[in-house]
Length: 232
Image (tube, rainbow, N blue to C red):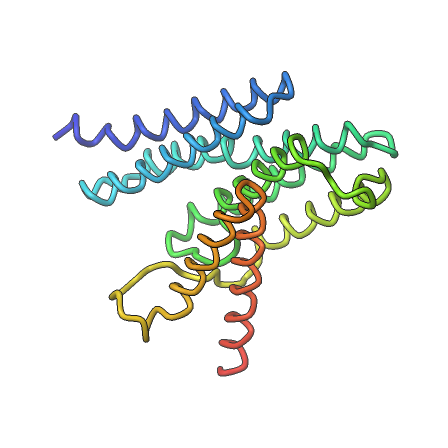
């Protein structure tokens, strides 16, 4: 029984290990390998939660350990990514340090989740990290349109993205849920449409699809949140 209880914690620590590895790759500006390490962090984070629920082992120690690991993998990592992306095209001294607002706001979100287990509003740190990780690969491996590549435009866009990231992390917007109570089309119409559009984007845009899907996910969430508010 004791061995079963430590299984979730092992996955949590593997999540932390991959987060630290991702940061090491970022130090050498290897965004591709950093993204791979981050992907493993996400997988281990999922397995941690899955096995905790499976063996009903949601204890205080595991919760604290999970938050500390997530802070590195999904708080520090995206901040370092944005820091490096800003530093390479910086027009204003020290402007790149604004990237660490992502880590600060992520810490606030994780702390809020710790004291409120049913805290389901706002963008998760995991999805936020997926966005920045995929964005870094696109910027480094794809040709960016000329007008975006202008330093002042690039800087404005990046600062705007930082602001939106921080806002959605701690917003009171209930994000679009993928919890299927059944598999009927009538009750899950929007979920199926979202999945079909996401698959189409992945098949056509490949890596570029990832940030597009996340943006689409946020837009849908905002729409349903406002619709729900109007109906109250």
